[in-house]
Length: 244
Image (cartoon, rainbow, N blue to C red; front, side):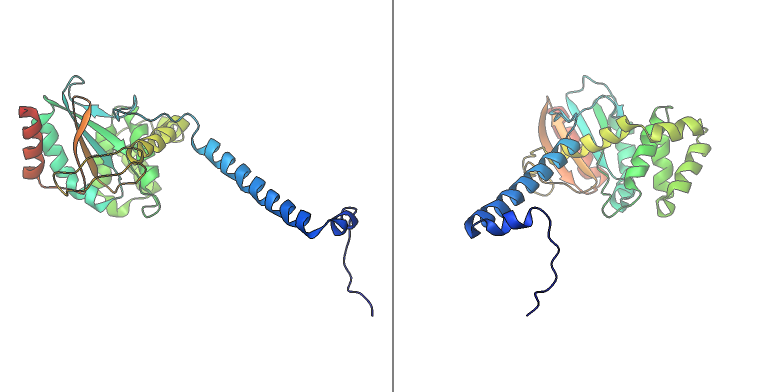
């Protein structure tokens, strides 16, 4: 009977000569080596330059209020998140009332798996920050969030009288992309104790939704929650920690 055609190379006779156990071990070894190499490559490319920021403030985060404030209000936002848009007027009011006693820190948490323009909008905001228009850019995005896309962001930059060429250049700046990435890692790698709002804790390594608000006092996390809350709830929490 004629044997089916099988293309051979110079390794084929050697492979056929090997015992079955040796072949099995060789295959297992190759699989282990493949996944180890892949894991190393992914780990090194994804973690370059990352160092966990324990107090959650990075040099390029936008802040309002005195740096020496004992109470700090961290706001992890997603510019395409409807809940963030709903909470934005409350945040604006809280800032106007407390920015003489509380430091407000804006940090990024674009959920780009469900909000396709969230990361680009965050980049646009930080590019606008370089020209002194971070909050103005965010305000404009939230006002027209339903239209969010690259053309709207460029229109907002023009309406804010930004140097549009510089804004586009800064928007592609790798440092801005790293800031956004590291802000998200800071949130994910943090442990938060039981929330006074929801009662939930946030384990280390677990992601959080948007908006996520974190209250720190004297360098320690004293409260946190995910989702927008009423003005009365937030002011009561801040008043409590300022009075203690």
